[in-house]
Length: 90
Image 1 (spheres, rainbow, N blue to C red):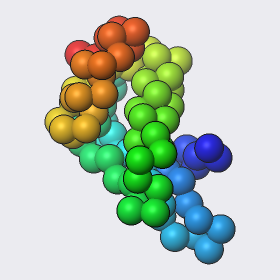
Image 2: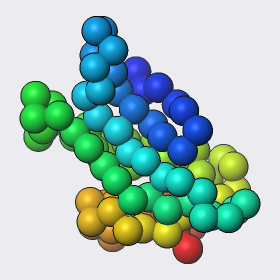
Image 3: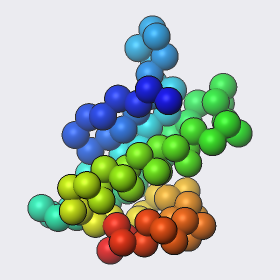
Image 4: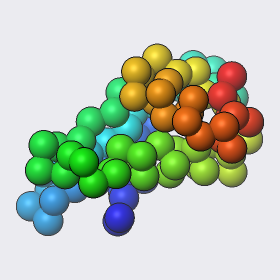
């Protein structure tokens, strides 16, 4: 997927600039973010896009040495199923 990396957001846009998917993770403090929202358009559901977003945010946080608080229900479930990323969960 060709994700767009913005501060506190990783997103997927259609060629017409419409948002197709995103994960939002605002900063809580200098070293912590809150993964609080995941969205995938109906046209992409069931294709693993949300999981790819979670993997992308986990890798980004890991590379930045940051931790995440999980308040998005999808993020909570995804990280439970992927213990290899426990190091980024606060």
